[in-house]
Image 1: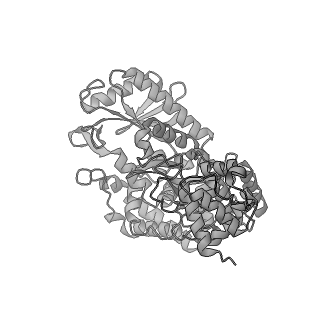
Image 2: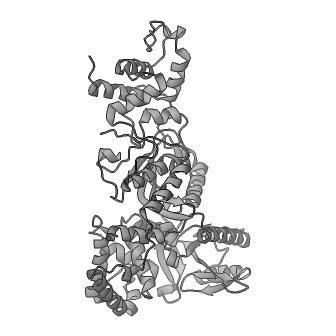
Image 3: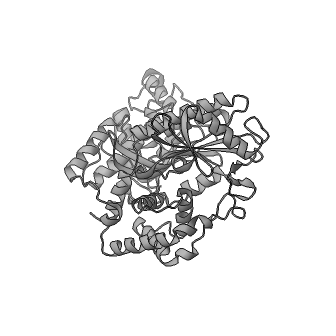
Length: 297
Length: 239
């Protein structure tokens, strides 16, 4: 199998089917969480949206979860006066139905019975001024206990970067190498490293990222595109720079030996006949069948 | 093809419902479309780019729950959505931009002859229907061709001959003169019963194929018919 085909097969393997159990569960939990938060804060209804990898098109099967930003109006104290109060009150509301794990800015949901992970993070916050989508989210370690950012800016920056497939594979590589890099930081880093490589092949994009990790780990920086002067995210890399460099070194050795399966694992290689049979079955499901043409204009 | 129709003549073409972007007048429809897209195609997202609405992301080919193949795409919805023709582009660079693969050099996909699309879908198509129908059919065809198989539902000849092929199926003739006479009727501002019927019977329209021609005019916009007429006149030599 050629490298291009192999990488496409890995991407296919990492794609969650729309009506598969994982996405169905995420959608159901989202509906429950939304209904519950609107009930609990009926006088101050929050804006609840999809965020994270689902909104950015970077979801992978190996590590999927759903981010649910839950933002209150900029002049609405119904959920709390301070961001910490908002965070605590949202957590208290969720505690009625879930077992919750507090994170830096998010609240992870687990089943109250057996603490099974729902893969859902609720991120409480408040709009800054209701105009541009800027929000404050609670972060105890941050200056003033808060972080200012913009969900739409983040989503568009990643989703429209033109390198989403590279991001997904680097996320998968992170999982396989157990690297403790936060997802949103890794995504921003990959977009920045590939800003001049958008027309390169996927193979070359990956090699470029790994080469930068191996040779330049100490100098890697990450900016928040929603708040570039306010949020320097480079600190999130400090504890993993060595690990990134080491993992990239090993990976590049495998790649140079043309051993891609050592990087991403084996993929099921269906024989030609089965592939064609699958495509034939799909063709039979098409609801309106058109004959392609060519305008030449 | 799934591309933009030729420029409209000064008179508003039949089938157009105005120049105001549809999502400005139909916020609830836009919101529901976004939800439906998310449920059916979670890797595709609806965004506004200026006045246009674009669906962008990864489009999977699913055999049951298994992802057999996927393509990176963008679909620009027409301002008159659901009427009008969405413009599909393959943005992953995977499909060669050659006419034999029904692709334009800028990545636009040629899904069908525009006249045929309007004829079969005079009320347009909802985006999810469009994805399940023409888009899925196009990409499963591309994947089959990559495996050395033929297009699953056949393909039209390139350029003006493809237009003539379509009209042959409707009017029963592939004589370019006959097709052009029909297109002149479709491209006219009004249908006049006293004109000679384009079928060549020698009778006036009102005593011949009036109902059929009115039906065609209701389905195929003036601008589309006019564009096709121009192409055939330019490209097809006639004695």
